[in-house]
Length: 397
Image 1 (spheres, rainbow, N blue to C red):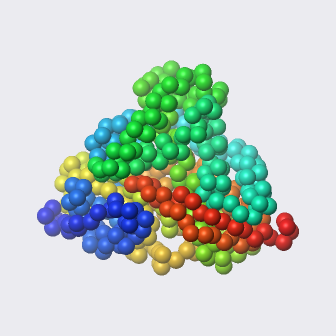
Image 2: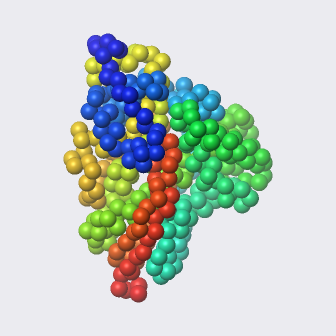
Image 3: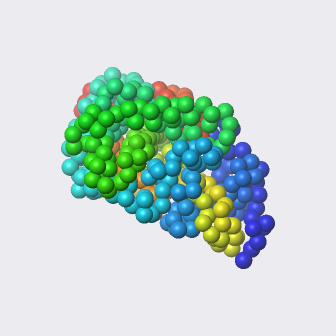
């Protein structure tokens, strides 16, 4: 086997404004350098190729989440006990609490209500003719759905998006952005800790978490981290997928025509949006033993950035990976992760995305967008604003 010293090293800074705005040239350098590379700035390794990232995510015994999914010690300590930062058997106990509520059967029962909400949001925006695809559409839609399902009281909901943004950014490397995120992360945890069980809507996911603790299924101290995980993870993928869809369809109108004329392409189109613009850029794993990665040996204890967004544009996996093609149907993309830590709520996120795209396809002939404002976050890549005008289809004028 190749010695550890032969793993290529790249002196890259992945967290400058320029790279966070457009990380793809740097990801290509990482992929081309080797199956795994060393990033001395972070005393961490990185995997950027699809096959290696997918295999690493599938092998939780060799690549542990419980040893921290971020790039700084404070974040890794703060996320201890959260479902995303656990291994079996603790992970399985936590995931089982809401498994039935996020099952395909349970999601199907939500379909009519979510489709109705999508129509109620989209119809007046299209009649209005101009709106912000991020704030008026992408953010407005999932926040009420997710927070209603979790059962949070109305007080404090207006701060949830900022808290969720900070919870992701706090897992970056030590530095000013990480320092700025921590007070907001602490605010979120304090808010959730202040909520009593009886303040959560009866029958909600939040109430189910506390009921599981009362029944001895999980520890009482796991309730707040589990609530935090679902509040944080339940928003960003959907928000970014919806706003990115508008951006890509505005810039690729022939692709929108395909979707409008054949709505059965909507699931494929959403998969393609998630592949080409993965909201979550990476999570870390820690090697529990010596691991062979395509002939290179990672030592036990090595922290590895699993670059989801790089893997989803890997030329070794995808033909013309920078081309947006709604007929590609990349069902095996890694935007939701993979393996044991594959996003538990991805069925809900897909239903939300499908419902919004379907509502838009019935009403919008063309999107036109102004200059996008990109959100700078150390883990999540997405838009902060996207001025949008629409040309309605003739039947709805």
